[in-house]
Amino acid sequence: MVYEATTSAPVNIACIKYWGKRDTKLILPTNSSLSVTLDQDHLRSTTTSRVDASFEEGDKLWLNGKEDVIKDGGRLWVCIKEMRAWRKELEEKDSSLPPLSSWPLRIASYNNFPTAAGLASSASGLACLVASLSKLYELPQTPSQLSLIARQGSGSACRSLFGGFVAWREGSDPSGNDSLAEEVAPRDHWPEMHALICVVSDAKKGTSSTSGMQRTVETSSLLKNRLEVVPERMEAISQAIKSKDFEQFAKITMIDSNSFHAVCLDTSPPIFYLNDVSRAIIALVEELNRASGKNIAAYTFDAGPNAVIYALEENMPVIIGAVKKYFPTTEEFEDPFKTQTNDLPEGFDVR
Ligand code: DP6
Image (cartoon, rainbow, N blue to C red; front, side, top):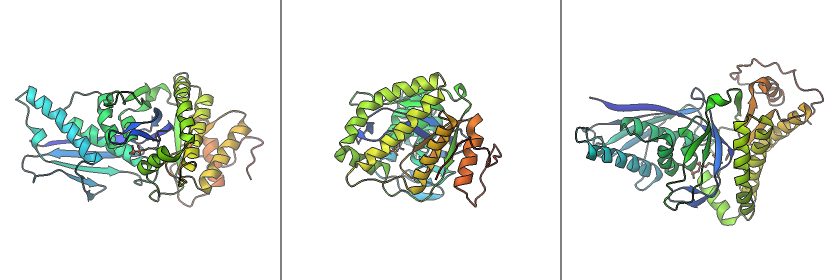
């Protein structure tokens, strides 16, 4: 009998950013956040877990084909330990179950996109690990319950256990048991919503999210203001999603991305994730929105220079056209809209 499970988990891109921990051990955030999980068939992690009584003692992990250490007491180790504990509980209740919790694990995980380039690889990776162990161990836990464990691997990972539009509630319990992910709306609620990912650089980022946000918590006075305004934004963007109000969705998404990068700049020493190309993309989207007389696109940037542009399907050709025109690339990319570069809104003008 082979005990093995394979799962995939997609990347999620936050519209309201998580930036700051009130508890670094349990990974409890200083604010709630909200993201959109991309579709399975694009950026994703795929993880296979296997247990076998005959494996040599100790768990092992391979990341993109290279063996990685599972540090004792580290985040991965914590996730594995917690998942194993849930399995053990089941085995104690039902002695007919094979003792999978006591056998060594072998885990192999692949990302189909550059790791640690600000494309949320830790989010999909940790969510996928937890999902794969949950399948292997046949755990009855719901995605929200699993999100409690994924959160301890990497905060943003808790949101990748759901598709569609997802909130991570900061919670208030010191145990962390109410700091979990919940669905705001399923993917098929707003199928017209698309994300265009503009890879400005696929190099590994300079300041990791983990150390960057801690520095912000310790040194930024602007963060206090951010924490005051985020609850209102969470409420407003959830409403915008529920009522499919792209205008509002875009407004809040862009404001929150800028607010997040402002607190990065307000950190000492400052953290610069955006570069000149990122800023040129911001200018382009702002001008597209101005010339269109409404928000047709929403940019957002995580801990790196790459842009994610959210837009409704009907507006994607114009947006892709503008990006192709102003940021020509020699690399061919998959363009489902077969966009021509000449259909920009009247009066559109970037310098
Ligand atoms: C900018 O989840 O990578 O992408 O919890 O320390 O692992 P850790 O941080 P991580 O931070 C993500 C930060 C962000 C915003 C977001 O995804 O909400």
